[in-house]
Image (cartoon, rainbow over all chains, first blue to last red):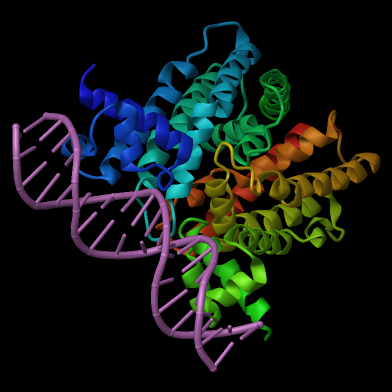
Length: 199
Length: 199
DNA sequence: GTCTATATAGCGATAGAC
DNA sequence: GTCTATCGCTATATAGAC
C-alpha cells in the first residue's frame, strides 16, 4: 500500500472518530506508520488532509445506486430506498462524519460546510426528487411540490434515532437500534403515502 | 451583578459561539471581567462550567408555553406551534448550542448528550405528543401512533434549513432565511394534515 | 476571595541530515 | 521522499502574595 493511501486511510478513521481538533497530525502519522513530515509533504497542511478525508467518506456513504429501487410498486420502492438510507444514516461512520463536520463549522469558519452540504444531503435531495418525479409522472403519487416532498421524506427517515445517536444516547445494543430504525422507516413510508398517494 | 453570574453569562455566550475546545478559560475570565482563578474557584473545572452553561441555554430555548396554542382550529394551532418551534430551531443560539453539544459528544465521552437529549428534544417530543393526543380526543386528527406522529411533525419542521444552518451554508440574509422557514412550516403543516386529518 | 506569575503539557509546523 | 529533533505557541490548572 502506498504511503499516501495509508495516510488517507488513517486520517479518514481518526477524523471521523475524534473530529478535527481531537485529531493530531502526530496521531495520523503514527496510525499510518510514517513520520509526521511525510504527512505534511503529501498533504500540505491539516486543513487539506481533513477535506480529502471527509470528502472520501461522504461519497462512499450515500452511493447514487441507493436511490434506484428495482420494481414492485411504489410502496415497496419507497420502503427499499428508505431502509437503505436510514441504515446508512445511523451507521457509526455517518454519525462520526456528521460530528466531524458540525464540529468544524463554527461561525467564521466555512471550511467544509458548503462543500459537504452539496456532496452529502443536497445530492441526496436531488436524487430523491428525481425518483419522486418519475413516480408522479407514472401516476403513482400525487405531490404538489416535489422538491419539498423529497426533503420531507428524508427528514422523516432520520426520525429521532439519528439525533439520539448524534447526541450519544446509544447504550442500546445494535439489535435494538436496528429494530427501532425499521419501525421508523415503515411509519415514515406509511405517513408519506397517506399524504401523497393518489386518492 | 454577582461574579458567579457574570462568569456563567460569559460562558453561555462563548461556549455557544466557539464550542468547548474553542473556548479557553482565559477567554471566559476576560469576558466576565475576573481573573482565571476566580473562575476555577466558582466552578471547579472546565467540564462543570460547560454543563451549567449549556443546560441554561437549553431550558431557555424551548419553553413549555411554546406548545400551548390558543384557539382557532387545528390548522391554525399547528401553524402557530410550528412557526414558533421552527423559529427557535434556526436561531443563532439554537444552532450554536447544537454545535457545541454535538462537538462534545465524541465516542467515549458522554458528557452532555443524554442529559441534553432529555432537556431538549425529548421534552419537545413529549409536549407535542400531549398536544396531538388532545386533538385526537377532540376528533380533529386521526393518528395511528401519536408518539411517532409527534416525532414526525418536529422532524418535518426542521426541514433542510436547520441542517443548512448547522453546516454553515448561510450566506443568505436573515430575511431570506425567514421566508424559507415560513414556506417550510406551511408545507409541513399541509403534509401533516393530508396524512392525519380525518377523512 | 481575588489577583499575578508560572508549571506542565500538547499542538501544528519546520530545519537539517540522509 | 523520508527521517529525528526542535521551535513557537496556546491551553489547563496551580502556587504564592494580598
